[in-house]
Length: 135
Length: 112
Image (cartoon, rainbow over all chains, first blue to last red; front, side, top):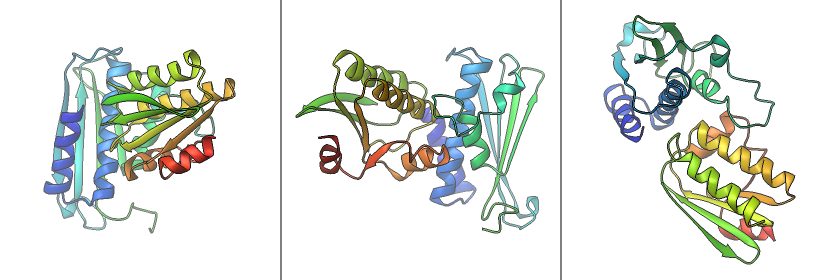
């Protein structure tokens, strides 16, 4: 996991041009996605393949012309039940169920779909303010 | 990740060095629960100064430690949170659930 985190961090910061805070959030989102795959799609097996594809999005890809990054994470595991992709209410103080929430907080777009081999998650983040927040 | 424990008065201090993720959070969980349940430590202080990264599995271990400490009437205190660790706890809306201090001196004062 540490190796993947380092690689994603380098790409997001150096190639895609994100600042330190956004880079940290994107790395966390990828880590959480990998954790969910290992836990749910691979039933806690850590010796199974996961492919992470990173692509820089140019300025035409976003409405504010800022560009960004697309991360596609694919596994060959079991389909993940939709209820495990919804997270849980944050008002409950209990272990577990936070990963999905952290992913959606970090990214502008999160898409999950079954693939021919297993599952595919597509994460997109644009540089700058989150669309619609005005922040 | 490296983890070790030391004693300071009645407080058990757990020092963690390195990243906390899916692979090593079980070790941290085990250490925290051993201090609380087996050693019956009245106060467990977790030193996160050297932790630059923690994910939701690490946070889950912290939450479990906190819940066990409440059951046993022990104190459970964190200090030295990096920006990344603080951000994960804030995004999880858990930062106010934990007792968090800037340094060991403050944590020990709160734990005594």
